[in-house]
Amino acid sequence: MSINSNMRINSDRLWDALMEMAKIGPGIAGGNNRQTLTDDDAEGRALFQRWCEEAGMTMGLDELGNMFARREGTDPAALPVYVGSHLDTQPTGGKYDGVLGVLGGLEIVRQLNDMQIKTRHPIVIVNWTNEEGTRFAPAMVSSGVFAGIHSLDWAYDREDSEGLKLGDELNRIGWRGEEKVGARKMKAFFELHIEQGPILEREKKDIGVVTHGQGLNWLEVTLTGKESHTGSTPMPMRVNAGLGMAKITQLVDDIAWSHAPNAVGAIGQCNVYPNSRNIIPGKCVFTIDFRHPEKDIITDMETRLRDGAKEICNEMGLGLAIEQVGGFDPVEFDQDCVTAVRSAATRLGYSHRDLVSGAGHDACWINRVAPTAMVMCPCVDGLSHNEAEEITPDWAAAGTNVLFHAVVETAQIVE
Ligand code: HGY
Ligand code: MN
Ligand code: MN
Image (cartoon, rainbow, N blue to C red; front, side, top):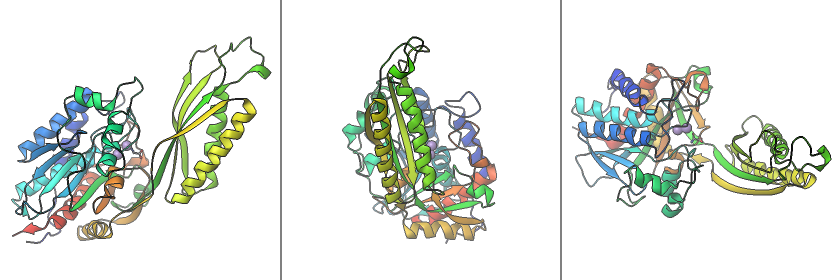
């Protein structure tokens, strides 16, 4: 039997699973705060594991807590087709970022079970640890170790704002496995994700066929000035790290706009010390996030930032340190996998367009070690990394149906 257009997932069951998972690690405004390696993350993992086992799958777990739920194929020696994303969220995250890709994979297996369809290649659903990189920088750290970008010990040593280490927190929640990270070989990897941008909704497209992912560069800046009294210190005598941060914030914006329309730049995280109302900031530590589809533009943005920041700090007498704390080059996904996604969307009658992913995803690293592609669905107002993130059940179903066809076609149905 070959896959045909009336083979679709059960969209009500998918939506129920999304809403059930959203109850774990609730935010304060209707979204989620299920940050990586917290007790809430552990609870979400346990629920996902229970669902996978109820669907007849076996769970593998590696040394970074990456979860691999396996549905057997008829040929146990055949390389599995992997599908998945991440269950961890931003502190003020939405219910669908990452989660749709993991539970979309679960829905595919549930539907294959209902239809009693066998595939030659096994199918494995993945939950990657710490995709967001908000508690422990950088983003996509576990798929990065899996792809050989970072070492395991380096990942274990990442610290959160309270000085807790990633490896210790993984042990504390009891989700550190024995499997060597990166030992698994994949026939292909597919990731379904909400767009997190406005293009699909604005153009009334059901599906984004992701051909590329833009590159990312995270630069952590430390400015050192002089703490002093905000009342009695004359203006000419101040060495104000807070003012330096404000000037560099404007520089980041100017640099991004100079490469319009595709460059983006912002500072999302900043810490002011000692953060007292009547002390001039003596130190500021903040992270710049630059992104662009072309590597040489990202390099130019970093060069101009370093030069401009040095000029600002020399003028103001501020100490300056800049460290790259995250980043990856622009990505071109596998042609055959992209074609499987595009032909699935066509077969199912969904409107679709090629897309460059604005956000980073685990697929960006896995693309280094296995043929990889992504499917995207729209999100309301293109909003994400905000508790008001929203999609429609139809968009979720469309994305998961395309994922279903691409995965099952690659895993090869057995008569
Ligand atoms: O930062 C990113 O692009 C991803 O959402 N972690
Ligand atoms: Mn994500
Ligand atoms: Mn995210």
